[in-house]
Amino acid sequence: MENEDIDIRIEDPALYTHLALILDRPKVRKEVSLLRKKWANKKSGNNIGFYKDIATFLRTNNLSAGLTPVIEDAILKGYVSRHPRVTRIVIPRDMLQDIVQLEMETIDAEDYEYAILTPMEATEQEVVQEFRDMKQTIKKSLDQDYPPQGLKQPVSDTISNIKRDREWYLRHEKGESYLSIALEVVKDKDKAYQYKDSVRKAIKQYESKLSKNK
Image (spheres, rainbow, N blue to C red):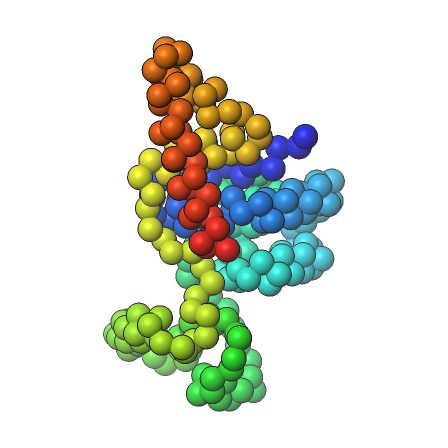
């Protein structure tokens, strides 16, 4: 059986948790593995088809386009070491009116990303102030019906011992028993029988986090 795991080489606990709860979803792991096979012997750099595949993957999994470099690394390298959470894009002026109009409307069953449109004439102070105001608006909107469904990204809370729990979860997914994992930790077989309940609880907690953030 091919290894579908995606190594996360990021030290920040909140960011590590945020990515783990995306990349460990069974559907995500499976689809990344399929894309890895597809592009294993092809040139992906500046390949429109490659980035179309990533865009389709993100859309069908209800994930932000800001995760493009994360999924790119997961496919090409099998590990993730960066997650630039701020994305810079250029929008043609003739599209801006439609975007601004859309912001004024409520569209049922849609998911939203939040952006600040900044002409080059904007000052740093103006951008910072708008960012602060936007953060406050988002916090208030999460308790209301707009935007519908809220944000699709996982809550970036930090599970205690996240790396350990993730490792145990992935090992158990491959068929390793709670007792086998416990034996590696405490060594003594009698103590391991008692400790396996802690292993089970940690794995179940991780599974619960994954299911809540689908």
